[in-house]
Length: 115
Length: 110
Image 1 (cartoon, rainbow over the protein chains, first blue to last red):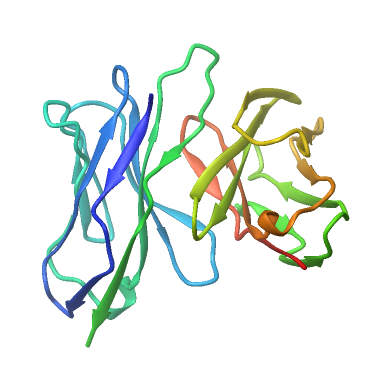
Image 2: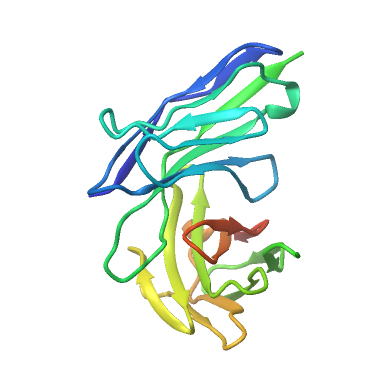
């Protein structure tokens, strides 16, 4: 079946540190891949996406590259800020015959950035 | 463009009652999906509607149901509420395979 595995949190970093959150997936074919971010008390915000192998999604300094050979979509940021503190979710949208856009999520990784 | 809106934002119910949650998608989006978020189970897919038809359904009991109207607005209903139904219910709309989420409805069942 389709599944997403994220590194367990929580992750605590100092401001300006380098961030990596690992994400690997299991799916048939070439699913679309996403990173969403959830701030306390809010819904999910789309952070970035990639729809085919070797695509790089980027937004607000965050990047992730769709690696088919390692079935991975790791999230990176070169210099984190206190405002990046949130829960990050990796997700995939499987290829389906009926055109469904259902998302399968990882369990989320809580990031805390200290000043 | 206005984002996805969900009403109400907070709700307290007692066991055995039923509840209806509402979602208004981004203008022009025809696909609406619903998810349940709990600390234990994470984010789980409930169902998806497209042009008033249920296109996909997750693994939830029949107490959970939904519908979509001709203006793409959607509602979900949970009947005979159980304590375990306490969760954040998220609605998402999409146009081309990218889902945008609303702020959610937080349901507490006492």
